[in-house]
Length: 201
Image 1: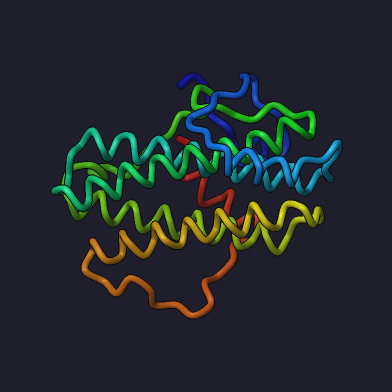
Image 2: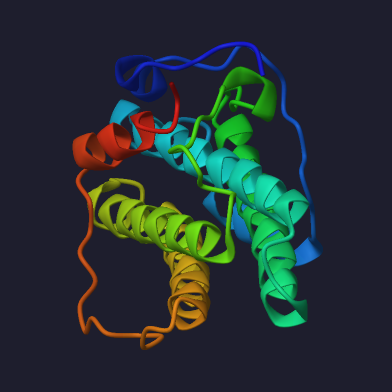
């Protein structure tokens, strides 16, 4: 990975690279197609840039976690499925972004960093997964309440539901109840991008 985004760059600039498809599927293509638009307001583009970065972070984290082999079979399957899901989320968002005439960030555009010891043990990986999925869910809930383009609401809401499923599984692997909060908190775009910036150097 060759460059880092500041929070301001993350919200305002296009990426230097082209689209890199992590994973694809016909359902995601349909979902992305339903939200394509010739133009999107600047605020909606900022949300999409930030959410694309969260998906790249998720893919990077789960890829590293799989290499660390912290779990037995159940946890390993959860990591692999989460990685697959993040790839499909990225593919859907990248298609929307490209359809709006923009170039989405790719894994080569962002250098991710993690707290020391994040991959050293089962507990460390699981705690980091919970922290990231809490961020991802909050970012999607904030975006769903903040975007102006109505056709974005369906894909953002569906991805938020997937992130909530991830959060449930990793909470359970941590020994906590899978679900606890009746009304999860949305994160405003500045708060979400600030939290994301903690993983970009």
